[in-house]
Length: 203
DNA sequence: GTAACGATTGGCT
DNA sequence: GCCAATCGTTACT
Image (cartoon, rainbow, N blue to C red; front, top):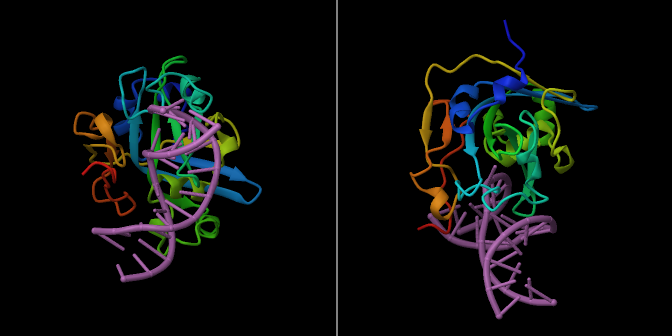
């Protein structure tokens, strides 16, 4: 039986929660329908001057304020002038931390996800990458701050993976990109996990 | 005020 | 593998 998650399940260190939350199902319902994605890849970001890769590294701003809010809410941001990415906010209010939803498998609303992701050649590419996942789920910038435990969102415990891998985060430049912060977590062997890419600038 | 850069993607070589 | 797209945020002058 599938269990509905509660806010307590997201209250804790993002680094600890990352591996535990792999396999979680996130649902988003719009007037177009419902899409549910089983998360297969997550990245932890903390901040507070500790994590150079985090948007919250230099403190609270208008953009990242959701990360400082109540756990279980969405931190959605706009990047590269065209993509939206979504985080699940963890840790107590006032302490910025989140888990970037980097990839997943569409398990409900396949047709709607295909409609939203016309560029995807295979179903495994529908949510393979943070911008793609957000698009498939129908996330928009104004969903930033939304409570993931209230309509139109829902979080459900999925089948827990038998194995979990950890490594350096993708696309991070500078100090936050190295093996010093192995806070990318994924389900090994899952075809929907995105390929690792180091930041273009770090050569 | 002005320039550079991204927690990326998709198309092309 | 290489690179353009595209614009808000950040990092300078």
